[in-house]
Length: 343
Length: 222
Image (tube, each protein chain N blue to C red):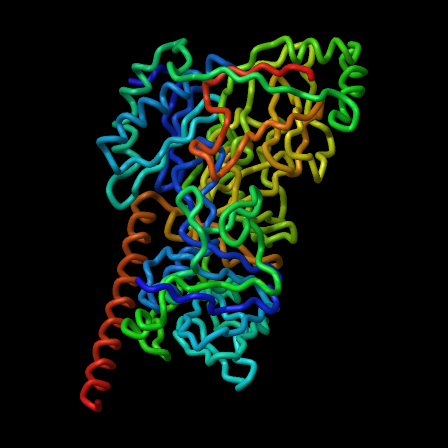
């Protein structure tokens, strides 16, 4: 694969911009958390639109304020939350779930604050994919930025003005896969404004069944002190909270912990690999990407389900992605035929 | 069957928690490590299982939910839990480390407070901390952060009521019956006795962490 070289310059990082990929699974025993994109489903959509592998490294942007400029003509794709992306020079809006073209010298600005459709949440993270993925060194089996420990991505830190990102591949790959203007046909479930489905956690017996029932019965709000490590929820404190921590045990993204103040914490991708708070519930795998789209002030509700429902949800998600991918390939094939006929 | 006191608990739709249900300490940690090793061996022939994460007295075992489920993984793990010795030895490849520490002063801003709270002199606190050989119980908190046990009872104090927003990397600290060295600058609530220059985590080195479960560690004043 020929490298794409420097193609995007960060003019403004916005609230938080990092390079993220599918994370580093399997290193918890060394104290190293999985990390990666906070909304892995949106990362996958951005990458698949360009013909990349689903977990290639892309740019994760948060809420508003990011501005990036094209060092050369480049085809990009955008997925995740609608953060009001617009090509500054032409005023052209770029919709989430699509591929698009930037001419050399054009800039893409994320103006933020787009009201969602009915039944959707606004979301807070968008993913901008480059042809072949972002070319940064692999560290410990991943290219994503581990912000807490300071490695991976660009120098182990959040991006700042002046950083230049190179693409793994030139535009030929993306152009061959999907032309600019291609759209992802299914909605992104991580943006659906529906309750987060949970399975009862390992410490329900210890906390008492009333704690789990209260978790599901309470309307929660995402508190200000929330980030890629975890979502703190405000609402009436849960009964059964314990003053003492348990012996530290392994945890995963989606773990719903009950600290001593009774206000639950839902762990996100940058969580510590072990924790000592009792676990009242665990968000099912199919709904974990949604956690990465919740931001302070959002309403959150939990729905208790069983393992069969969790399994069905995972199958549905997989089927929806396969269907959207098939539609994409079909569109690309028609497109190639059309252009071939004209040429 | 697992011993009556241990249990394999559901942890979402893609993991289980094997909980040894015994007090945290060297014995519990050695059992958790031994169980994690046994699961690692099973995993070599069964890719449905993910890499186990040992804790103080438990092992978290992720699995591929598209290939198996909680019930089947519980049945796979139950014989390993049942066969787990009551007091397994540390791993045969465990290593010994001597870590040089500058105790007190700016490097150990809580040394005087620990002396006051324990009714000991500062020198006695250092002698007790440096006079004990510790074992790596498990890793967590951050990359390369090794929980070391067990701290002498005379030094056991709770965490600070208000954690520091910034603990310098290399800080050597205590909390309850544990001690540790912070691999990187981070927030933290442990009491800081001193500081070391040893690199505890380097992502460019294989393995990236200096201290691994079962390793033995001594601190020496410099």
